[in-house]
Amino acid sequence: MFSVLIALPAVSNAQSASAGNSVSAKCKGCLCPGNPCRLCPLPPHTDDPVPENEPATCRAIREAVPPDPSLPGDNQYFTNLDKSTLVCVRSGGDVIRNTRRAEGYPARVYCKPDLSRH
Image (cartoon, rainbow, N blue to C red):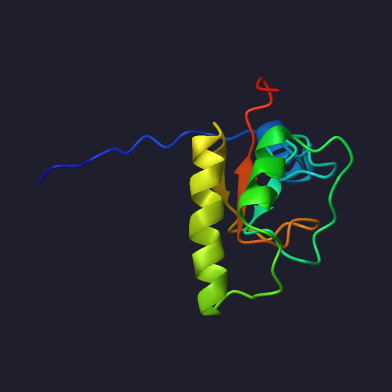
């Protein structure tokens, strides 16, 4: 007969206590309060406020795809999403899918503009 020993890492109480605090850690990334990356929702919706000092990429998207009241599931929504995604990428932005639906970020997709461009 063979006996097998399995080594499991020991976690101290201090380590496990600090792991519980990671939930309350500061928000990181673009979908944080205050819109640190200056994201714009894709496609533009008529209910979306237009921020002062809007990034050029977001302005270009709104000019190419005027805000529309279409909701996800409507044919026009998907047409506008395709067009606005294309303009975002062509303008140097990155497309971010919003799977968490964080507070203040109701859209399913956002454009993260290249803020180095003016």
